[in-house]
Length: 176
Image (cartoon, rainbow, N blue to C red; front, top):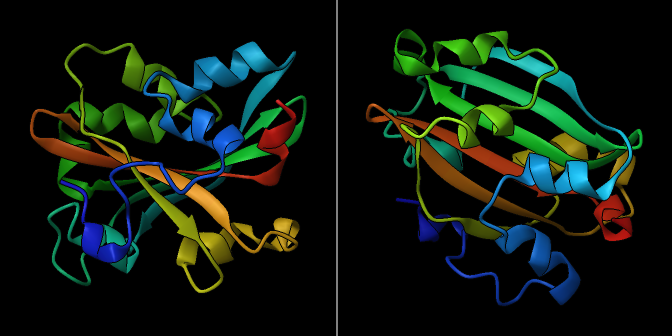
């Protein structure tokens, strides 16, 4: 269950209407982006073992200080970054059904998530990220004019192993 005490909302009501359509879609974001542009691609930024952000630890059932597998990518439409995706998998999940996640490279995680009927998705949660939130600070450099970046996240479970996927929508999404 996603933790509302960390400021994540269960409903996208305060999100601006054009962006709300993107954030509240429960289908595959990859498929939706592919339909909205001529050329879709995934650009890996960071992949490996790291400490999850403080607002991810409890959601994943981890103890503070524990490490997890983290994958960060940009989703680009016609070579323009439109989404920053951040996925966190507790290391115990790497030995199970999620072990293929380490070999995705520049392939979309979304394709894997929505093509495997064994994977269960928890409800979406939404948050306005601002300066000081680790994900905003990580990606805001090239998007410094934005004071707020809206994000959504959801847990995907496979054999009781959770994978937390957070998608931060960048200003260029408005053009799609």
